[in-house]
Length: 411
Image 1 (cartoon, helix red, strand yellow):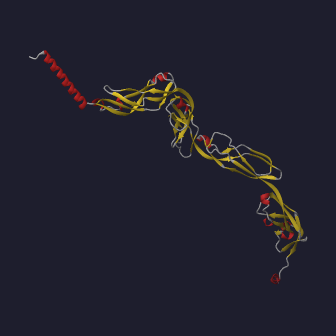
Image 2 (cartoon, helix red, strand yellow; image 1 turned 90 degrees about the vertical axis):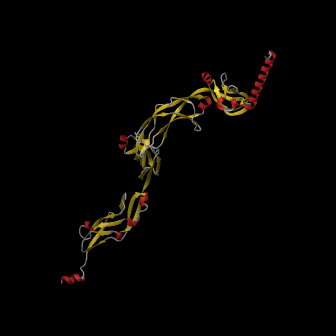
Image 3 (cartoon, one colour; image 1 turned 30 degrees about the vertical axis):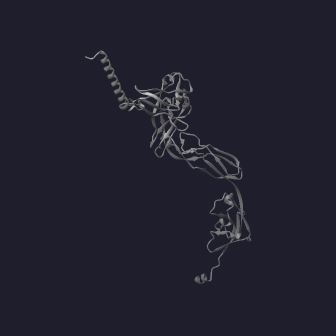
């Protein structure tokens, strides 16, 4: 039998052997090793507590960290970024910029060697409200021959809520309304979005979030423009032509109203004692229609002077008509000039020449073989007035002597 002392020695040797075996396994089979884990997201904690104080995290300068850990190889062999929690606790901080330490949570058996960064720059902002007007933007095109009227929305403005800098950057609240190929009025419930002046959609709370919008869509047609005139030219002048440019304008209206619109009335054009051409821009008198072409017509009113011109004829140039058969007609007076005065608009009269007028005398008006017959004129042109110097001329009928052949036939 072993003595007690020997048993103790044997037990110690067994422990040392077990320890040696364990050290061998740890150092050779499952040694302590290190590992770098990158792109670990930083979590913000106690953000809800900030909201109760009217604050919000506007941003942090770094959103991920890198961690070096160590531990037994079996413990860290499969460790990933999802097994490590990196966070900052924003409780107790005030509005503005603050450097907040990064804290880590690791699985059991894993130790931190190093991590970077150890602090992040965090900006806290007050949560603010702001009212902003709503804009209804039309997307798409209606059917040809139709026009989109002014939209009517149940919401004219919205309240946006969020971080001060985000809310201050808001440029417009938009409800996007699609009208593709429509030919009648539309009603829709449209979600509202808020954008910055750079066109970026902002993450803010919007109240209300939905707008009920009606977009009227009207048929169109072209309608002539009518301009009332009250023009009084100076004595000796006259209105010659009136032109309107454009002559017609495209309008839109409710179908029944559109069918009854025959012309567009403008404001009255009034002038007195005018001698020159008038150019006037006029406005359309409003009515139960919409001007699709938003133009102001230009009225041109031509004013011309009335002038006279004298043309000189000779008595010998007068043509006799209705001379009885077997007679010749001749003027009893010597050939002499006769003045014919024509009157009309300057542009017309200045172009008139003697060949435009023929003077005639009607022999059929003669009573007997001699006497006075009236002088008149014929022309393809229309004059305001024609004055012939002599109203009548004295003529004489002479029987034509029979020819020799006629006498021989009679015998």
